[in-house]
Length: 411
Image (cartoon, rainbow, N blue to C red):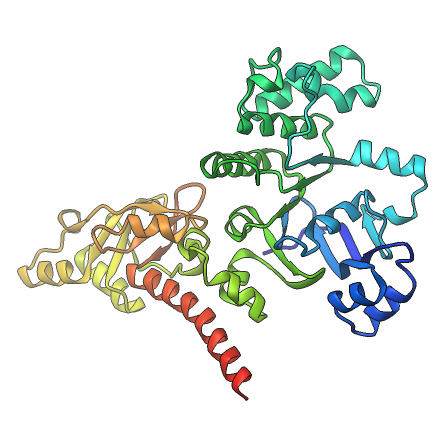
């Protein structure tokens, strides 16, 4: 996949909390001391240790970790709510760590929007005023800012609630207001700190869907913080996993799941529902194809050419009409019948980003499914056995790492 330009570059960034963060605590950290040892010896707390991340323009980059991992600290270093102890943070070629107070205020106001876990709405202001707040701070005239706020509310599905108050909305609706407020200023970068963590599971999943739908329209650069690996793997273009302030792995969701690089990452992935993360593209194969105008002999030739069990029948535009199995084609040939049409069996079509869990539900007939592009043209096939084999292989990865860890402990 083609890489996009780097939007946010976090380089060698460390954050230590305490009275003298760049003194003994930093020296101990560079000497290889642990977070716990530094705390015990100096009273300082290591929030982030030597973070290096390139966030691409237009991606949802998820930073995931448990409490105390440093994920929220890292996010707050991006807009300097926390001052990094060392390192640089470059946004669109500008070194944020070198900005003076006035420049930093303008950067926060114009380039970033932030969505918090606890909605942080003004209880005595109506929803429209809450969403328009950032634009009011920027000095935008009332007519323009209200129009922008109304547009942002419509984008998150809250058109018609402009005159309501936060107390009149559910938690999920209040979080939508928070998201709309961040979007109303049209920032280049969205910083989302545990934005959905306070929501009930069903509402949380709906908000994830909402975020991905909005991202499909706006293509913002989003840094998304969560402690939930399922959420991270579901919404993230790429995922960064942290522990004790250090980065353990950065990769696409399928890389994190299928190729964990440390024992810590492996412990997480063994509890993940792989079928809801892995997508068709991980198991897609070339499809044996035959035109609808072809014959049984053509179908058998296509099947033999790929060593497949079936051929996908396509119309003149390359769109799938169904499949012809090898067995049915061989029986037709034995009868002397070369017509394809009576042998065609309908099968569902999926796209490369359909999850394997959804694919598994479609395998009622046991026939290979058609994989299509955005125009509905056939670009491959996916077989039931390949899906099962892939899910089994992923489960085996974490088991192998756990076994290796146990053997290492014994020696």
